[in-house]
Image (cartoon, rainbow over all chains, first blue to last red; front, side, top):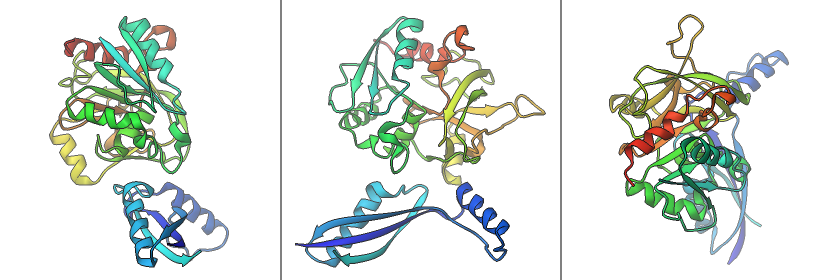
Length: 85
Length: 230
């Protein structure tokens, strides 16, 4: 077994009201970044786990996302990176 | 009748629910520990308000995997009445007992205040003691109460008469929808398709005595008592 470090991004699903993202976007506008069109605030989760190979590590993390890490009703997730730890 | 009130680490309305049942309703209540697999032969289960597991990850996301929740889910699937209040509503949604999710209030602020609710249906286990269209004065106390579901789910809830409570009391018209937390279609409470699980963000257990500012919430408990034969 090898140890992997997997990063997951979880963001509010597009189309669902994201008041936190909107507030940050408004703040960026007042800071002088008028080009900002939209901001989404989500979570970044890092999981360290043992797995046979990279693919198995990713598969296992996907299952964690489906069952716990992301809410399937309101959030999307993506595996941002899988690295040997 | 025996009410079983689940205590999770971080529950803080379990005692309020106990008081409402024992002191105001005059029925029996027991606490159910989250680590046990024992519903103690309760006739009704209450998932109380609070901040179970510190609301880590998402409100209710961890609590749904508590040992006791397996038994509560099985109880609900057998048709057992479950009253899920505030954090309990969040847990019930996470557990898939109710559709949708409760997201951060649109204002991003925690809201603790009395609100006006409108009873949308009295054809439920939990509202048969109310008139349809009746107004209730009941407190809310939450940071994550914005009911959210896709349009198809919302339409289905409405068509099937499963929207039980709406926030009402717009500035112009007391009957107008008005959502303090940004809930879609001003939804404050819903039931599952079988009608035995009620989830609501407002706290009926905190409105059971005029001394508390209102006793409009007592009818929820009286309704269950009236309908569930023991």
